[in-house]
Amino acid sequence: MLLYISDYLIEFDSSFAIFQYLTLRAILAALTALLLSFMVGPMMIRKLAKYKVEQAIRSDGPKSHLVKAGTPTMGGALILVAIVLSTLIWGDLSNRYLWAVLLVTVGFGVIGWIDDYKKVVYQDPNGMSAKSKFLGQSLVAAVAVGWIYHSATIPAETQLVVPFFKDVVVDLGILYLPLAWVVIVGTSNAVNLTDGLDGLAIMPAILVGGALGMFAYLSGHIEFANYLAIPSLPDAGELAIFCGALVGAGLGFLWFNSYPAMVFMGDVGALALGAALGIVAVLVRQELVLMIMGGVFVMETVSVMLQVASYKLTGKRIFKMAPVHHHFELKGWHEQQVVVRFWIITFILVLIGLATLKIR
Image (tube, rainbow, N blue to C red; front, side):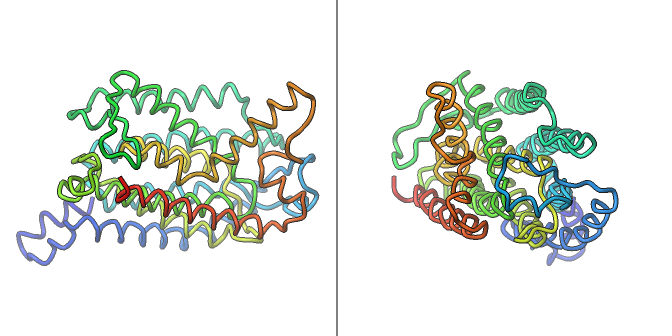
């Protein structure tokens, strides 16, 4: 929005041209989202506590979690508000990629809000039925993916890029649709599974989101894209604004979500953040790199899949409890140890993901 205002003001003072720079707007988007989080956060937490929007604690979980009973949830709404407002303020609203990521993020946020609402009102830790949640996620993802596919103008928008191999590019054609759908829905649920400890999901989301913002900026710059042998995508640069807003909003939320948490993210935040990471990766053609950088999310998801499969096939459990962060808790790790060590793992994986820009 302010981009259009600066366009007009340039006629009177050329110094307003500074707001045309993408890097500056990305930084300002991050700072705006961070400031909004700090301003709105305390008030939102008080309101959530007043109306007893509290987290229902699983009875079969670690006993140390019982002290978390009564902590406000649905704090992810704070992240959503900060991301959306900051993106609308600093982004180029004529950019179709920007509207695609906002559609997916808000759409999955609404599904998460409904899920959280059922948990709060009925004090049921399970919330929405798995079928209803999956159907809603699939619908939102399908609409976004279909729109992106049919509005694609260059082949690079629907090609699969294989990291570390600059000459290996797969023309997906119609297969782009199921791949993009799997990435968005899968990442959304993976982040949701990871969100089980104070600060565990948000920091990896921040790190991965920031790295994807770098990919977006480089892909949107034709000279950098050609030099690095990555897809040159003219519309992708504006996604750096969204990723900047995600980083700022995430850091603001972490201020209140760090141990001991004053508020929980809830599905409204976890599903939205995961879907946001998924759709950005799809748009910048870095789905495989997302799997590397988001290795913690992958590990958490795979641990649940293995646990369920093992129990159904053999009647035995592989882990003490799934997702795997609970396994480490039950082995004696303190909650903060699990969280910080998973952060460190994510940091290393993000560096490996960024290394794919040059090692190819």
